[in-house]
Image 1 (cartoon, helix red, strand yellow):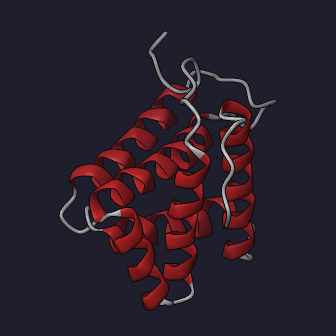
Image 2 (image 1 turned 180 degrees about the vertical axis):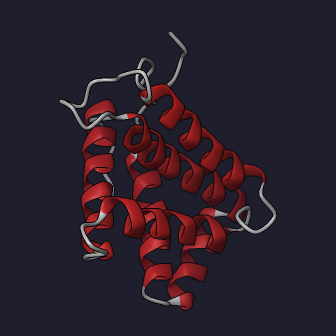
Length: 148
């Protein structure tokens, strides 16, 4: 069986990393360039880009790798997981998507096109993704506290 996140789950992110990444994504979503710039400056552009790729990995691959039937992997799950990895490669190495705004906007577009019903409330879905990431991070790192 090919190794992917269906068989090898990703390690949880640190709580403060989840908070920073989603603060940047939300700021980009609403066009708040001042807040996005402040988050990038506080976090550091290189680290923030790695965090955005981490968020994308935890959004793209599980969504593209999961089958509609009971969430169990099936024959096409691995092809879909490969698509998720390809999207991550674009984020890591693509000319346009290698920038902080490009990475954040790609996560937002993916959320809008794939994760919302009939292009519903993207901000709400992003909040749900952040909450799930934060729960996972807090369970993995219970001594950590974050202020968001």
